[in-house]
Image (cartoon, rainbow, N blue to C red; front, side, top):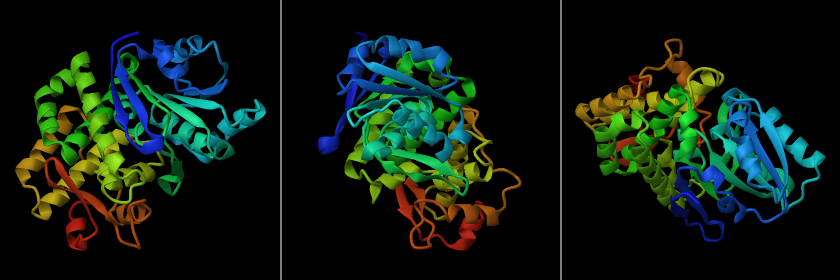
Amino acid sequence: MEKFSKLCVELGDRSYPIFIGDGLLQSSELLASHIHGKQVLVVTNETIAPLYLSSLVDGLSAYSIETLILPDGEIHKNIEVLNTIFDTLLAKKYNRAATLIALGGGVIGDMTGFAAACYQRGVNFCQIPTTLLAQVDSSVGGKTAVNHRLGKNMIGAFYQPQCVIIDTSLLGTLPDREFRAGLAEVIKYGLIADVEFFHWIEKNISKLLARDPNALCFAIEKSCANKAKIVEKDEHENGVRAILNLGHTFGHAIETFQSYKGWLHGEAVAIGMIMAAELSSLLGWINQADVYRIRKILACCGLPAVAPKDMSSKIFLELMSVDKKALDGSLRFVLLRSIGVATVTSEIEPDLLMKVI
């Protein structure tokens, strides 16, 4: 077995490990120890299937395995496509001891996890994320969902996986645009909770962009450790976990406006983080030098910095009002008290907000 590092998300009887290393897809014993029945359904997409599906299935010959290949892309993260997972589970007579395996990026992980949460009121699932964004963010923490045309991730459940297996070698086939979008979430962790990590990213961004294996492993492990720490304190996002949504209130509005066909999630979040930084500066919490550093590191990643030109302030407000963080009619924003310290607030004067949207 390849050398790997191991983290744990400590949630009592819902605790689970995160394994991080090169070549872990071939380490079938890691996965097998978290499969408790004979029936296994591997859910993946048409991009990942020809690359990695056979490697995974070949290592699980002891099980009764079915595979389901879904269309690729955020536009397919909906109830209709989710139903094809249920169709397969029912047609193949899967029982409550079944295990679902999500082999893909955030869309596959979110939909497979939600299907697992719903099928027969809950079956086990495991995450094998194949994109940087999924490895550092969406595969950890138990948020599962599908999109609705009126709002992103509005239909879902908190449902933790049995394990997360992060094979860093899978990033070798990830397109450059998706890789850079994933870096937005890495940068987010430095901004919300770990100023030393943010400093490290600034110093090592060229290594990350070159996909240096050691730098990547460090960034992935740091991101997962930061997320695990926050999720352990607030599994169901009743408090501190909301800081993980830095940039997401603005970003989700952009994605919804574009009908999930425009910018990638990480690209929309990058714009959202700049907007949040500017709003934090207007409140006097961070200075323009901090905003410049945030803009600079995101620009180094080639990420967009400005919202779509045809997206008016009125549209922003309308779409943000559907955001999950909105409470009793009030918009809530994740902002920065300083680099490395985030907070959630609804006390934003309308004239200040209008300056950034």
